[in-house]
Amino acid sequence: MGIFDKLFKNSDEDDKLVMLTVIAETLSKSDGIKDEKETIWISKYISNQPNVNRERFEHIMKRANDEGNEIFNKVQNLNEEDKKEILKFMFQLALADGYFHGAEAVTIVGFATILGFDTSHMLNDIHSDFNIDKNEIIKALEDINQTYENNGLDRYSTKNLISDFKNINLN
Image 1 (cartoon, one colour):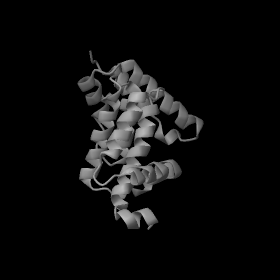
Image 2 (cartoon, helix red, strand yellow):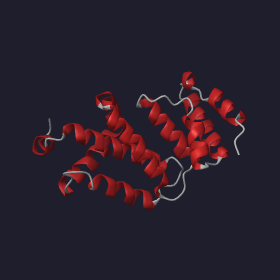
Image 3 (tube, one colour):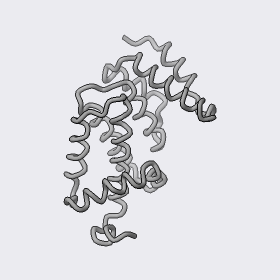
Image 4 (cartoon, one colour):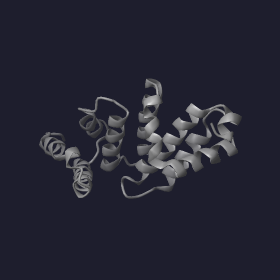
């Protein structure tokens, strides 16, 4: 337990806020453009949480920068309410710049999978509920698939998902 954890007695809550910050960074970059509106939204969201003063905010940002994706090793410590809060947070952030991009939808579904949610219909539901460009979603899936193949992670192939999604007859 670090000095800030002892001072604030919020280790689990800080873990969640660090995780949200890392997720936000990933999600806000997923469409290739980190919009200033998203950056402001993230800062406001974290700083408006209970008992987050300037020092604690800076501590959370530093941890997010230092720990990065390693924070996801603590996902199993989250309760269902926290996991739902993370998904809600991601949807709000995706809408913060006024445009819900297909790559953001794919990123949200990826994180939802990590959090243990049933995502079998989630991408289709997001597409139809938010009227997301189908081609953006397909391109994002193809990009992820290429990254997996380039890194020897063929077992995570999204080819079936791409094929299924292309064949869905949505407006």
